[in-house]
Length: 428
Image 1 (spheres, one colour):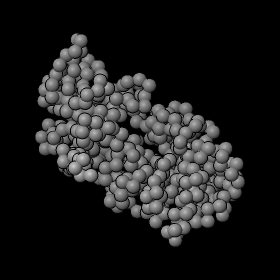
Image 2: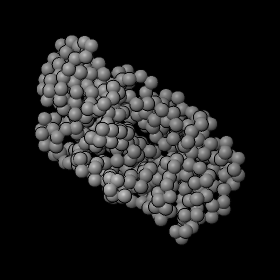
Image 3: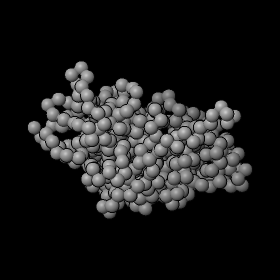
Image 4: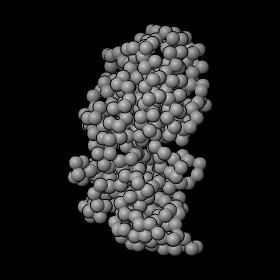
């Protein structure tokens, strides 16, 4: 039988001993490797046509240090809430390098955009444009907007399809084509292009390329019909990373060879048009590991279970949310070398639900209390996509390893953090 320690079938795990990290910061714990973040960004940036601007989607991981590192490397910020906007600002991201999108923007969010705290607002409905024009006028300004289009076509090969069918996102292509010229319709807004986001977790280079080509053609078609300039086109992104058996990571060389040719042909027709790409998971997923400590070991109906101190309350994505079948992220025993057990293991968290299984029937050594288990590729959609208040455990600490030194980049929630914001009947 094979032996495992610090590897999960070759996937990146913490560069520092997990036992030292756990002793210093406790568990559950997310660990982000700055070197991996840097390599992932630069590996694409160095190959991608210089004219394509990369914007980091904070929804994947809104940690301010992660955003700050990517911004210093050259990425802008794509935000979808006031808190994400504040995180980007705290990370030093300039307003003109920030875009704001989302289908249900609040009054406060639109007002922040109207005050000039972002460079571009991506509008998701005609009603939103009407209201935003009023807010921009009240702020005594003019503003640039992109129209998010829900195209009539859809993309195949995405883990989750975002367009080409009834969706809450964007304005249907047919509705835009029928609305006529937009010049003067919103006196304080200048429509400068379009955005489309067709799908997520795409793992085929040709699908990304075809998606890019169709969105660029859509931008030409829409802006010509609306009589507005094509100053900017946001091609979305959706670049995936491999998590499961049978999947492979995108090859950045193959990907950029195909995408660059399409972008350059587009720029031959529109040399001054900015092309934006939004990336979240692709930039951060491979850099993160979620570390939990085994508290108890038990057997149920012949299957071994390790009960850990963290679970889906911190890492719902690891259970395959959005997938048709339950599959495991790469997993490893981190604190000791041991042969794989002849039985697959289940690792659960502390929640009172049978759905709280971090890994199900995974190849692992025989686990025991005190062991550290790591879930690799956990740098995206961990805390940001998990029910952190279920059973009121709160969110874990987060650490970034920079130049070989660990740094705490998010404090662990304590009981007071969760209770102090609540009011009793006597407080009424």
